[in-house]
Length: 197
Image 1 (cartoon, rainbow, N blue to C red):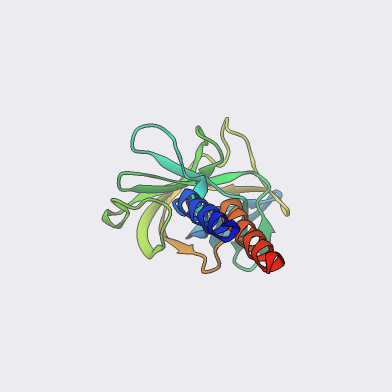
Image 2 (cartoon, one colour):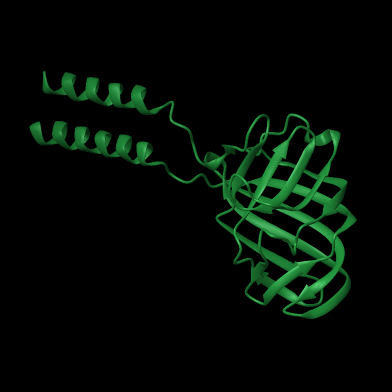
């Protein structure tokens, strides 16, 4: 009797939680070449790579067909100058055939965007690329505020640059609380059945 109850509880828990979304880490990478300044020191024709770490379960709407994911962390590598943590929050967004990097939040001001037919139908939760496109670098010194890094204020000049975008979904999924609960219920059930014997 007790065994039957435990088996039914475990089956019910499995059905209830098996449909839960699985969060996966995703890395977004934007690259290009531009002029600018870091902490007031100018640089020219410098390769930059902005790498964001995010969570696929954090995808949100920014109105209409626009979708975005705020990054949980981001870095910028400036060729020959070093790698710096981005202290200003950022996000990756998609709307139609336009992909972009911007300040975090629903109304984040664009920092870099561009279009490619490869972006049509992309949903920010799967791997993509690398995709080459012409990217517009814009609004680094605007009313949206400065872009702060661990190396000081970063400014990239407004320009159209040859750019690439890549998204890589992580291979190690982060366990969700529902999965841990299911595991706990199963372990409790097995311990209870074993104790009764």
